[in-house]
Length: 168
Image 1 (cartoon, rainbow, N blue to C red):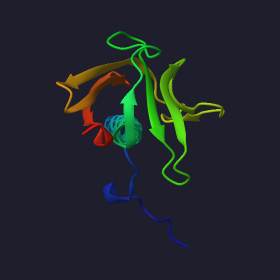
Image 2 (cartoon, rainbow, N blue to C red):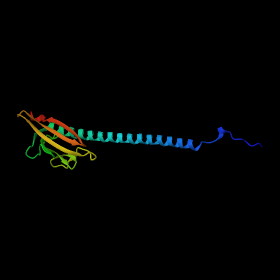
Image 3 (tube, rainbow, N blue to C red):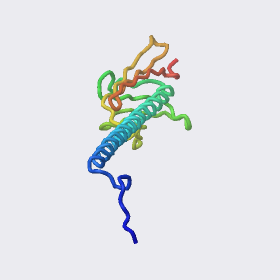
Image 4 (tube, rainbow, N blue to C red):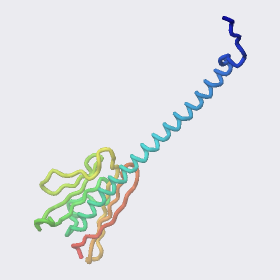
């Protein structure tokens, strides 16, 4: 059997070619890993921002609904125009038509709503911190009254002004 001669085309890669391929592969890997890390950070930031906005909107919505149903704002027992604020509303239970007192206040870093005599319900999620909660009573010359709510949730400021429907 005759011996087969090796030609130049049958040889493997040279050391220089292997180094070039390894360098290119390393650079491409670093680029793709950096893109993946950046995308993960962007998605995490979007999720956090969505949680902050959702929590703030839910809180302001519930506070606004209770203010609209209220007869009066109890300025004597509430803490108004300072942080941490405490809003005390004299209202009527919409189901039983019995008088009740609804209180909104900051419990640590979460906003809680208490109906006098009950345990209380958190209006913000545990993963979002409320760092500022201020209520302002706005009397409108005897015709009606309103409450302005200011809150800093997750570093973002949120505001709402609601008129007491039963006050006019």
